[in-house]
Length: 333
Ligand code: AQP
Image 1 (spheres, rainbow, N blue to C red):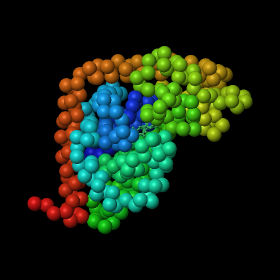
Image 2: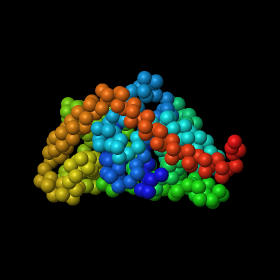
Image 3: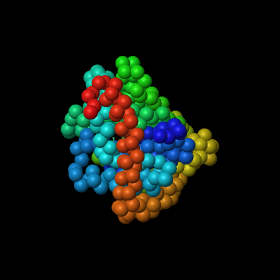
Image 4: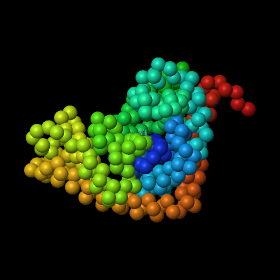
């Protein structure tokens, strides 16, 4: 077992990975793998809560894995695997269900939002945060890099772990979150009050990491700006949510602080900001796309990575499952 602190995070193969997923999660994963023992999972069990078509889910799993590799997740440095290949996730999920209150899950804002946008509001969708708690607690995780949108779920994870520990002793580590301070939550391009999401049915709401130059140009040119007067380029989430969102994306992909961008663009128009962002996004995505195609073609290589990833993950997961089953008194031969 490792001496390093453990980082766990996951991503659902529910569509084309967006620039929001990149900024909020994958870009951090890449940095963290240098310092921590990182375990990253393609959360396919979570993805079935929205009942995707068989072939689409299957394709999305390898697409997501390939894009993670293209973004710099290194299998030599991190463990990367498919969630359903490690059955202990579902086992711990069931146990934790018995330590979670119905009222707690009813308060989850993501469920409240998703129940209105989904035709099929199933128990899996409702139970999603408990499976997420199982994902994290299974690996005795110290730190979880997440976007701001996931904070409520992590707080629930901590509460479930504390509740379990208060009955059975010190079984689970209480994890802490790592939030990308600059990234916060990247917003939808057409509705900057809403989160940018990869499963959004209107693809103009997001920039996908697969978008080519033509699509990027079209989507950014159509992005909502703000109708306030004067139209200066300033980061102000309350008065200028659209411009702030574009500045946030630009800052994260160029590494230039928002303060510096405001100074640099002081005398420019909204249109100039869009041109600047289009140029930077196109060259940023081109590099990722090229690497993505390289990995995606090589299915044997991808299979090797997820096979060995799952083998290592299972070793860690088994230690926790044994502890939990013993603690609650399940009979073992
Ligand atoms: N808009 C965002 N801004 C910053 N971070 C974000 N993340 C997602 N959207 C944004 C972060 O990406 C990681 C992986 O997310 P996920 O696939 O597990 O689920 P999600 O948060 O529900 O992401 P999406 O894109 O909104 O997926 P769908 O549409 O399937 O629900 C997480 O760390 C998340 O914080």
